[in-house]
Amino acid sequence: MKAAVLVFPGSNCDRDMAVALRQSGADVTMVWHKETSLPEGLDVVGVPGGFSYGDYLRCGAIAANSPITQALKVHVERGGYAFGICNGFQVLTEAGLLPGALLRNAGLKYICKTTPLTVATTDSAYTSTYTKGQVIGVPIAHHDGNFTADQSTLDMLDAEDRVAFRYADNPNGSSHDIAGILSANRRVLGMMPHPERAFEAAHGNEDGKGFFDALVSAVVPA
Image (cartoon, rainbow, N blue to C red; front, side, top):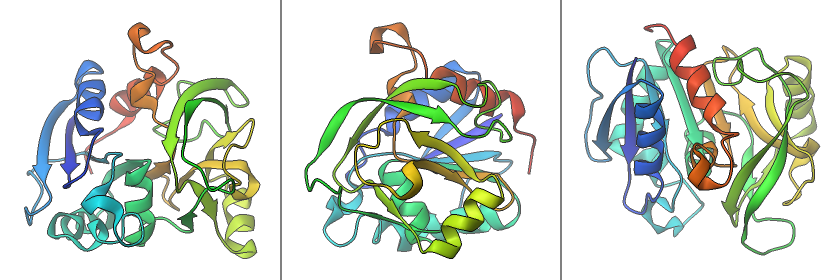
């Protein structure tokens, strides 16, 4: 599988994401935000966590209008896989590739801890190694992780089985306890928790490894 990890000024989990993908068997290329195209033959694009452009406006808003994000949109429109973690999830919503928005945490404080997630669906390339209802421990590290959408969008996500993960103990006020969602074609995923930070024993647990193993084994060329 060929993967690219986008790098914005302020990204701080790009290397973590690349390491997880490589150790799961992917061929990974790092792509700087000023590039106007993605590598040929690419299967999946990862948008990492961090503070793109310093989060000086809305989180992810400037990154969503960068040259490489326009190439990401083309990749997604032709059926390519893409996933965004934490700030990457914010970028995907700001770019219109996923519905909803990420607002300030309900408690108005930055949260950094391992939190329990419930696997809400296994019908995706990202979650197929888990079992539905399985509870896994995955770190969070965000100040603006409160997923919000209008009621019709929330109902649609539920009805179409597009909620990938829910918080077992909601830390930030997210609607319907949503921690991660899928696009209509199930090839784009955004989530606030960091599976790349729960990839190997040295991290304290390996519950995030299944996310990358599932992706690498399931993805077919777009």
